[in-house]
Length: 219
Image (tube, rainbow, N blue to C red; front, side):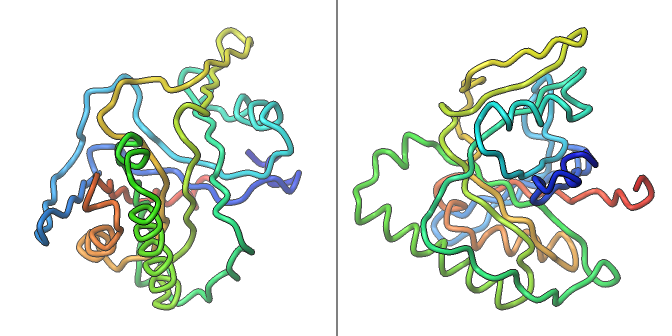
């Protein structure tokens, strides 16, 4: 992974705590429903992520194949959705690891539901996302966040016996699909859950809350 940073291609990255530490959040009729993980008996579980700048999909796949877990596991490559306009300036760091912990808020929803929305409804939901992002930037909780392209554009990369294997997505018939994420500061799990419940898609899907692993001892 050091080569990724040395090449100036890396954006953000994080390793996640085990899936049994996950918590899911849904909001229905104004009521918040919280459930402890793990949530599905899948052969592999999400263990972390990188964001990177690549000129082509082929370059992104090449970097993915160099991630150690591509050997013995799978790396899924998804394009980040371009929502237009200049990227906001990085927020000032209001919190530190001395008082807060990092959490990844994984946003799951049915892509079919998005596709079925009218233009006005989709625009209203997008506006709510922009407002939420603005608020958590102003409060200092925001670290990073991106919407992802559709699962049909996903690719999986694994390395078997030194040979790279690339498969086209989607890969599993799941009820909801990962559509994006926020990485945030929170003083504890309760605050992270409160932030997750404010994400608009918590009302139409699920937000999974995962603590970010402290990897400082391995650097």
